[in-house]
Image (cartoon, rainbow, N blue to C red):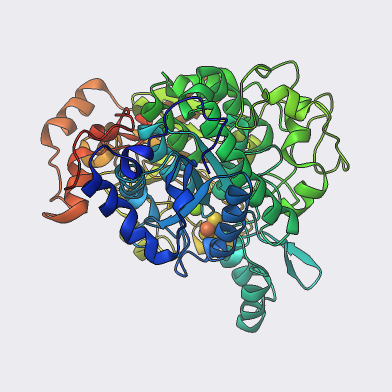
Amino acid sequence: MTNKNIKQKLRSQDWFAPADEKLGFINRSWLRNQGCPDDYFTGRPVIGICNTWSDLTPCNAHLRDFADMVKRGVLEAGGVPFEFPVTSMGETLMRPTAMLFRNLASMDTEESIRANPLDGVVLLTGCDKTTPATVMGACSVDLPTIVVPGGPMLNGRYKDEQIGSGTFVWKIKDKMSNEHFTRKDLAEAEVCSSRSAGHCMTMGTASTMACMVESLGLTLPGAAAIPAVDSRKKLLAQLSGRRIVEMVNEDLKLSKILTRDAFENAIMVNAAIGGSTNFIIHLQAIAGRIGVELTLKDFDEIGSHIPLLVNLMPSGQFLMEDFFYAGGLPAVIKELKDKIHKKSPTVNGNTIWDNNIDAVCYNDKVISSIDKPFQEEAGIAVLYGNLCENGAVIKPSAASQELMVHQGKAVVFESIEDCHARIDDPDLDIDENSVIVLQGVGPVGYPGMAEVGNVSLPAKLLKKGVKDMVRISDGRMSGTAFGTVVLHVSPESAIGGTLALVRTGDIIELDVPNRRLELKISEEELNSRRAKWKASKAHADRGYVKLYINSVQQSHLGADLDFLVGKSGDEVKRHSH
Ligand code: FES
Ligand code: MG
């Protein structure tokens, strides 16, 4: 059985029907131990199902089942499916941070795709780093590729309260210091916040990433919001399996979908959904792989005037299950009708506009119309100034309006351990007007740019009822977190950025409307501190971490490894035998 619709010679035929008989024998014979019939090797598109399943990545623990659904779809459409594992990254367990391994997983994905007899790829993703990592790797090969996001968990529910993954975690310290909330209550909440398979069900980074791939055109329409345990998610996996076979026949590669317009659409959609600040770093890294120019300024220029249309935690009130019932991302994209690039192609062969034109909003408390947004301007603001020459970011929709223009005295912590050791010290000289500065948590400094930027407020101020303070660091924060938190300061302190030179008592000025972040000390003083600055010892002298520290780009470029930027296509010149 050969596939009659194929327009070009399949890449896999180079393995399965080579001129050299011995080579063909080797490539087919070992696969036969899985029971593959003759016709698996005679020109049916071979589809790799790239699985980030792992028991240690709880958000992806259900993806084994999904792979079976994808296989069913591939077989129905005349293709041949082979599932393969790649490095998985669970956000909650991995130390020092899952982000350290995003680029490693992207290398694994890239090399696994290129080295094997694949014509098309389905990426099964979930926990937040697994989506950008696999998309980055796939971009560097550029075969026809479709993403199946694993879906959010069902809404968290504790007694009569909706509790959002992550967002609840950031309130624990406050709750336990102020309310009648015991350890027993906390133990119960622990179960209540993870009621089903799936990833964080707030608009954290995983949901943001699922919306990112949908808005880029890399999923079937409506994919992002379907809960992991809803039968429609299985159907999505099956239909994606069918569709990837057609995509191979149409030679619909990633680079045909991932145009500059697609990236601009993703930025607008991310603003409208109140998506995570991590979106910036991941989208830039993906753009770098596929070869589309995208700067930090683009995020502000394209996104910051887009209104907030989605009322989900951490910026709002509801959770992903509510978002799905309210119409999901299609209802948001439809509202952006006067803004998005309507002609951007997507994996199903239709434009983004054709896919979403008939979308309906079923609950305007969750998804608003563009005329009555939850906030007028929602995108991520990019700040510049002597404290962040290459930029820093803040998410205004998750911040306090009264702190958007603020001047205060710095209280500096030189590491997260220093912060943990001193932040609750009753004698610490700090009040609600202080600016908390955290150094050493950037890509090189942590290493891996951990999600520690949303430092907990000092216990004595929480007791007083203080809810928010300005915090500044070269790290990231979880997409589930909130607060007036300036992140991604570049250049980072570990390589001698100005952030490294701040001292307790210095005045810092934050002015979000004017996009400024300044350290108010004289040029002479700054230069003299700079001359005395010395780098700390590197975090590793061997292994992947050494490679990472030596090659990682700064956050304003997407924190990819410098030698991974770009793509080298799918060709492998030499055989293995
Ligand atoms: Fe996996 Fe939040 S911990 S998505
Ligand atoms: Mg996270």
